[in-house]
Image (tube, rainbow, N blue to C red; front, top):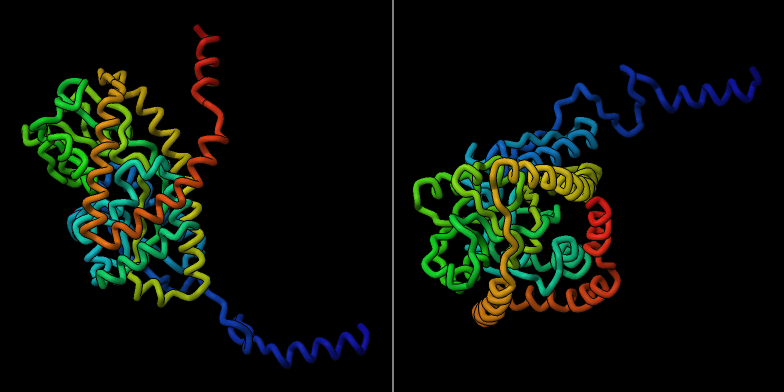
Length: 371
């Protein structure tokens, strides 16, 4: 060993005295034996719903990526508060966070329902997320929450496929079929179906099927084949109408109590944020896999699927025009959000519609070769 090496060793040992396995003077190392920061969450979904599974998926990503330093425990809807009361519980600190959809807070400011209800100027859910992240939506939502004095940190994620028109006693063939129909939906979709003539009742997901079974509802929509199947829709109806503009571009929302979120160290905030993006992609892939499987399973259970007539879709668009005009006149923030969405959509939809090939053509070609 050279003298130079010996001197270097002495310098190292002098400047980095080892005590109990840690280096004195260096940044403190995290021990897995330390108690993690634990956040108690609740979703707005029943435990059996795939939506609650999405909440658990996000929590697992955070727990794994943080190396055990941050632990999110997720309870199902109703464990602490009712689904529609989640945001207040998170803001007050009764819960540390939660998983839901912005349309559930529609009663606080109708502008929040624009993140999920309506045709979104032709944007699908992923494009609405693009607007949120890069077109000004995030700043607008933060402005809304600040105006409502809600102490929450919001992350919007998880693009949902177009939601069905819903479950009915018999196929709807014309707009007049909605006259007097006792129907369930949420958010600005309430206004759409009210304009079509329905008597609308906003119920959380876990209460819909029981209401249909008791005759309190004639028809209802929730979200997708997997959720609808496990919630029991095929037990009370065998008719499902596909395609609708009432919720054609919705996403999920992850909420944290802002005070508790702000107290996290920078690296754990980065874990939380990057886990949102990872969970968003994972959710969209899982949805394609599971929803397509359950689409087949529901048909095996005797469910008949019908395409919503274009006349009803056109009526929804017309109703939406009237609703947004009225809401914009009543609510300056609604107008501000709507104009921001429209500006982004005019550019993004033109690009997407001009760019994307007709995938139905390729599918028809593939299936024709099998017949």
